[in-house]
Amino acid sequence: MASATAEWLTPPTRTELIENLVSGVDRYNPSNVGILEDYLYHQIRSEEYDCLANLAILKLYQFNPDLFNPDVVVNILLKALTAEPFPDFNLCMSLLDDRPPTSSTDEPDPLPTLLPMLTNLYDLLHQCRFPAFWAFYKSEQLESLRENYTIECVGFEDAIREVAARAVKATFTRIGLERLGTYVDLSGPEVDAWVAKQGWVVDGGVVGIPPNPDNQIESVVIRENVKLPQLAKVIAHSAQTK
Image (cartoon, rainbow, N blue to C red; front, top):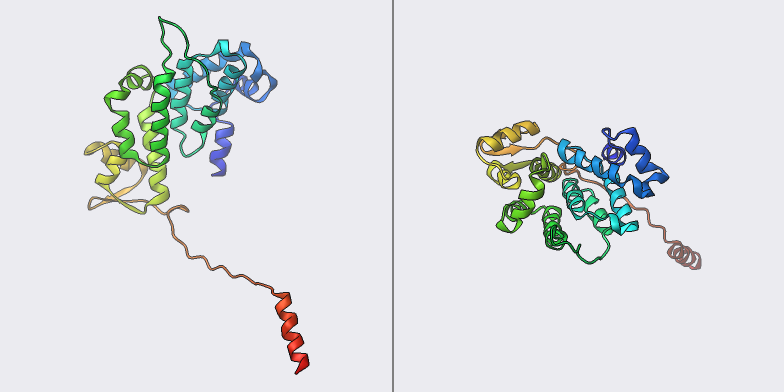
């Protein structure tokens, strides 16, 4: 967990330029928002992820509402979904101030429509309701999200499957292959290949999850020494009076 936190704070793919922008006072310089937005789209295309850099964009939007780009916000939230169970999505949401929709007839603001849907997707992931997540994600209601955003986000669905994998590894020692397939929206040879990629073994339609600190039940014996000084005094006094 410590290594995961360290990577979250300083991803190995972060360049020196972005490190200076994220860690220094320049993170509040509005002239740097274009550099950070370009870096976000690099993350979208390359399957990389840098939460702190994306939070810096949202902070700049807070201070400079004229720079606000709703498409950038949607992409930031999509990347944050893939970080569950880290609190990235909620951190991003906390930086989105209430504001009127962008008034443009040519490019209508997508946020009023998409934000509740993204929040619903996050809730389903956070509650580990993976079959419901996939059903909602692939519904007609989210067609615009898929066609305009997630299609550009390379590896998005695979990253969500890794979210499910983290939950399975922390919860199960054995799980049915068919049930696991509903968690990752795969079946047949595809789910077999995915399980093999995870390094898990299938035996008779049941997937074995290797032991790890989260899925092992260990008995813990707790001993408490309770001192009762007042009771000790009463017992000693009673013994003296006899």
